[in-house]
Image (cartoon, rainbow, N blue to C red; front, top):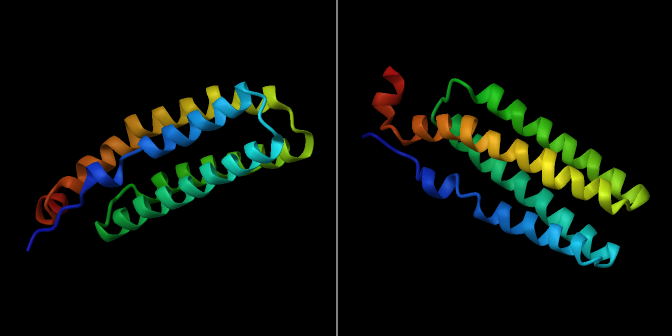
Length: 133
């Protein structure tokens, strides 16, 4: 029996966009640091869960590029953790905002358009076809 993954649901990144935009709004509105801290942790937790779900689906499908895709996730999570620690030490709004608007946003768009696109194509194939590709 061939099995496919609901890639539309798995790779729905609308919540990431909502969380990121809410965080940027907090920074723009000069919100209290505690609210920014909370939103940063929501974003981090969401990404950890999103990436774990993607990696589980890739493992289940024996996706050949799992290792590279996972490494890309881990690098992004490590960088985010570093930036959160940096924020918590100095609360430099401009530094955090620059990272979120440029580096993280650009990484995410690139990741979705390249790695997630290829992965979604592979995962959406019936298992038998995926084994032959």
